Image 1 (cartoon, rainbow over the protein chains, first blue to last red):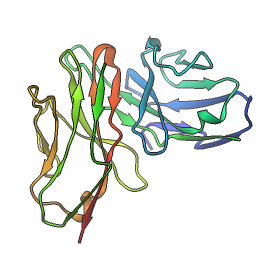
Image 2 (cartoon, chains in turn blue, purple):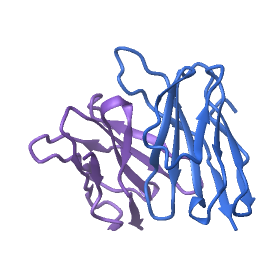
Image 3 (cartoon, helix red, strand yellow):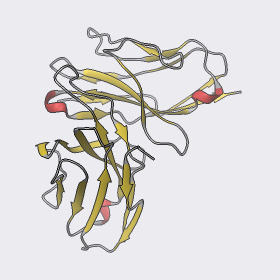
Image 4 (cartoon, each protein chain N blue to C red):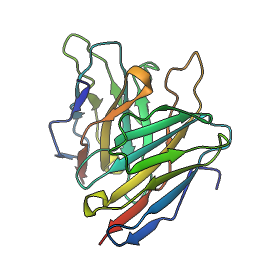
Length: 117
Length: 108
């Protein structure tokens, strides 16, 4: 499968624990996005990377959320001290964008469903 | 503030009937507008984008800057069009804003 992959697909954790999700984008894509989706809502933009640079992180939900893309390939999203309100589907997407294409087509992963007990 | 509004959460039409999914946006600059679709048990995927001005699976969408709308239309709905549809906007800094989605059911 050459599409975007996310691991784990499901995560159940207890309140207060830290969790980390991984996203592997399509290999030639330079942009990587993280979203959160709760029931009945559309994806909510969290952050995005162009190569290894995190160009936008103002919409991360709190300082408990952080993301990295150390080598410009895979990315991780960490949530520290999880709360029940963090329960949601976390989606990753990647795209190939350049100077002529402001926003390339985003290819989404299957998501990681987080349940905080 | 940037915002995408999809007023209909649920929409049902009969097979062969025209369908229109509404999308209105709020953005002060020049946005890029998209429609994404999610079929049952599949990933979210791009359906079309306004800059390409193409028809995908019979769907079209015209950006109306005066009305700040980007409604999705298809003249004759098919059963395989049943899915969740999201309107999205890309604005400053390549941030994306998605609407809450419209669940389309095409009745045989």
